[in-house]
Image 1 (tube, each protein chain N blue to C red):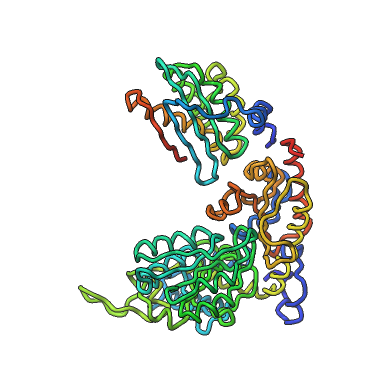
Image 2: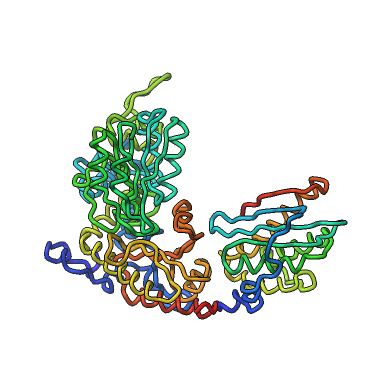
Length: 425
Length: 154
């Protein structure tokens, strides 16, 4: 364990602001120079960097534990199974699930949403039913529902939002009805950084007998997320955006909802009894984890979750809001720069999308890259939102616990450089 | 890595003052090219007569490299026979994708795109217009010279 986070587990320390400069030392990749400049990594909404404890856990697993789980009657298999199931317990506690088996390990957010669309959607959505979404959704929280709607003859409806992505709750209330089967909504927008009022939306959905599935890819890594207080029916998120490995994610579902669902994948380790013509399914969570799972990934995610808890999710959240707000303010003050999404003091996280007048985001990204600054430029897998905003693409800076105000200043300096280079200011 | 290698003066000039920008009402070939991953778009209008590309216009939106490259391309091909245009396209692709020496006789200002090779993620931006042109001409030839509308996706 790194010295910089040791001792951070006391409640008093958890509420204190985090020390980003000290935490950086936990992330080996951040020590490097890129193109002769210190790396400024501001592409955390795409994927976060990994602390040494997570990298070490992966190596240690393969060096000391590797075996297939849930079936071996030998030492390593038992050890691996225990570590894998322990990771499930840690993740369940992290999101305050009632029971560990409400946590299903997946490949990531996309995988989890597709599982819900197939395994829950095909059985519960019928012709004429409605699924409510917003135009802000990432393609992964849009396309699976489009396909479900096509298969079942259902209809997608889009809850209005303003230009900052703030959901019109009155309009939402009016759209809900007996025909509403599901509300599928982001928790934090991957483009605008805006936070959706998920608890209120869940309450209203439930009043109409609808379920709510929340895309937590950009919220779970950055803020405390409590599935019981939010009262959501499904929550999906990705390990790699929260200091964990790639290829592992989580589908949370309420126990009774998961119990009533058919499996999403069929094969080994998800069965109870197999006959030649038909089979019966294992209990939760195995029913949804057919095939050999990403064992190392799950264990790595468990370690990542421990790391985040030691730093403190309240502190991480406060840091993201403070730094995101700072970036919004300094970018907005620049001539020719427009920030998309809520104001600095609005309900937002640390994702900041911006456009620079007469400069394509890819050209901005290339100039920044020349200064060792990593951002994302493009449509961010949200083409309908780009059309709504009236842009083809945006540049996006997104922060995590190891980013500093100095790095935001570097970003601003480099955007000025791009403007000068292209002669737009 | 120097930004000047990517954004050479010639490229910046074509980006800021695009040549042959616009549309043609009586085009024999209309071909839309797009790179859905980054959103760059280039649409070409060609008037072809007696096997010559008599007129070419382009419109689109996207990064400086994609738009400048399309502008450079229109200058390189206007007035040339289709067979020669194919050679020009091959020279550009050879330079961008195969590491061939730039051929100024064929490419004109296009040799300035050589610097883009140092930026692998931007090569697709540079070849978008050229791949779009290639598809449009191929479909025109396959149609036996009848007007065509085509769509290219990177």
